[in-house]
Length: 232
Length: 232
DNA sequence: AATCTGACTGACCGATCGGTCAGTCAGGAA
DNA sequence: TTCCTGACTGACCGATCGGTCAGTCAGATT
Image (cartoon, rainbow over all chains, first blue to last red; front, side):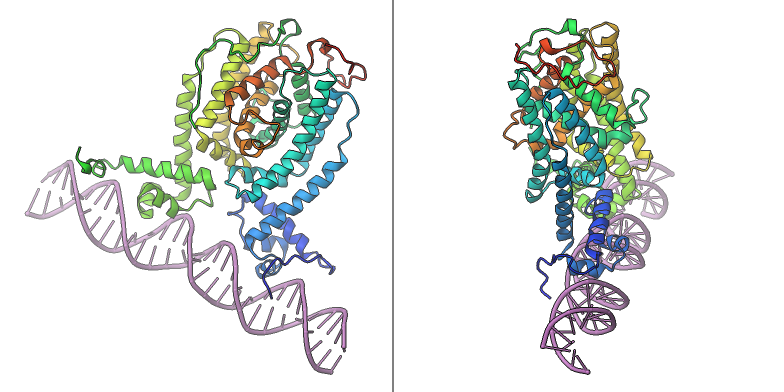
């Protein structure tokens, strides 16, 4: 019994490992790594706690396996929905819709990743987060760069900045929904399609009235001369 | 002058509570509620574990006290920086800058709130989150509504939607910074002032080239089959 | 002086934590 | 049949968890 990297392919008809992974993903996402106990995972998976340690060498190994498994599922689906038509505005809208619905569909995985980010990741997991996040990000930046080259988009905006704002809007919708959904001003809490449509519309056209749009004020702070430097 | 002045000032026990709260806030923010042990908090605060239970009836009570204390500090500072000048675009820029630097300054509290949101809050804490978040949100919506009434802003955009995007951009900058800071496309990771300035600029003017901006197509599909031609 | 009060502590509690171990059991190979 | 392998389990381990308790001590009150 060598307790070292026991992860054999599920040759037998037993779906034990899959059930363990599913239970662990759910509990890790719901309560976090520390608060999710191996006993609770075992009970939810319908196996004994010792059985989990038979398939996974430690709680950390189980957690890593959960991350790996979830990432494989997400990236597999991600390949499906990347098809750039031609008009950048259309691609952008399609990306926003797909990205947000992908987050909402894999809400357990999304919560897992957000919990990761809030903790001090041991660099090994930081790479995982950067990989998952970076795939969406690079694709989005590519779309935006293409729009700039074709002249459809302003050349004086940072594509990375726009990408962050769009991805951030989706992530924020997901994680803060239950906070702002009861605000009287909010009417899009139950309509992610409406949300992403409005987000793209604002990003594309801005919120100023067309007549009031001026030429770019380059890198100048309009008004307040206070430096507003923040320490550390 | 005399070295005993350091250890002696514990006359009134009130200093102890402050040290406990500070240690608890730091550890709760860093590791989460469950992973932060009372022993660790006691050690960091320089008191015995039993002493914490003398001042706080339970771990949950301590956590609630930490939230209450942090909220009081944040809201106290929030009152300082609300001064609407006149131009909506200037107010928006000022708000974005102040909001982001406020998050970065109280990063422990921000992490605490984000952890809260990711868990199933017991409604009592949900109200706290809604209160803290709602104060910024309402102020921002007010600014935007005023801009619409004055005609400076488009009337066909949802002020709540814009507010969510701006707040979400700030929150996302805070929480995802260490993930996207190593992306080659990103150059604003260390410059929150640049970030908020660019965010407001994009929200105000959009990313389309001014020539390509059309009149608002109400509720219609934005999939422009035309354009994409090289113009300038 | 005697008394009281409250901040404070070391030792301790039962429960639960992650993890181990000896062993049971089914099925494939010999 | 016998043997072996690997999935699987109940019982158990030391460590740590949140929380308790008897008691010490300083300072204010009487």
